[in-house]
Length: 315
Ligand code: RIB
Ligand code: CA
Image (cartoon, rainbow, N blue to C red; front, side, top):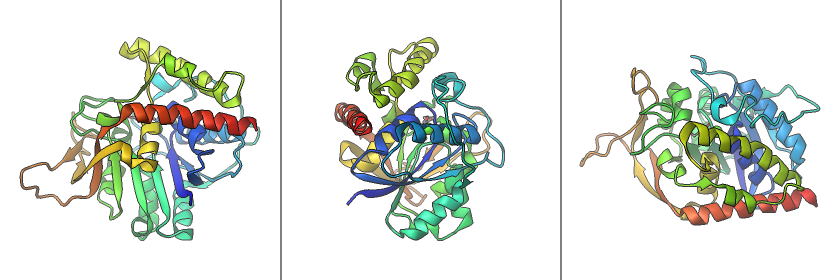
């Protein structure tokens, strides 16, 4: 039975890669895709999501929802890696730009329609998730699982020394979501940084003559240049792809139950994820946190799954 999922995304290159994978993954039914501001503004994330949907034309079109900026606004964006349009400058066309329901309404309606069946895979800042929980206080209890790209366990941050991008963008929402009474799993940079896509891996993707192969190269190659220039790395992280696979194939990861919280006011530590790992913790455990990964198997699954999508789109 395919797993019902909601993808909350801020495409963004790695979010877009997840869409290419998930929309044709026989193990999931993508019930809804909600856009959130992060790598790009919410409206741009929504436009990118719609453009990718039009381009891929999946067999089942998920419900779409659009987010809005956090109450305190977005402190920055991710265009330095993801390109001016969030998709590596591909300027992917969108024939019909639809006006969408608010993301939090789409989430609440989908969870209410399938109580205890929905897994939300949150791949951007947690603004939409927090707002869904505020809109309907029963949603955390009716949710099957919430899997999040975000935070750090022992690793340094990627947007400040202390904070990971998604949590840094909206720490207040992250704090609220961390404290919500639902089963949640956090996939921190400690684990997502362990998987890097190299040019050799790109060579293993479906050829440029296929729609998915072409789209992936268009969005990935500019990121290679950004990673080389900005970080001196030969390869790119695909944080959200790792989180997606953690939701579907947890056996490829090692997790531990911890009590996590978020710093929301620190001048130097805004968005830092803090865990009570004292010998006798005082905080109540509230999430599973991934701390190890079978990266080779995860990388193989990424390539295999994307090539399966490429084959489906060509049929
Ligand atoms: O820190 C990694 C996260 O920030 C990923 O979700 C990536 O898409 C960016 O949003
Ligand atoms: Ca993302």
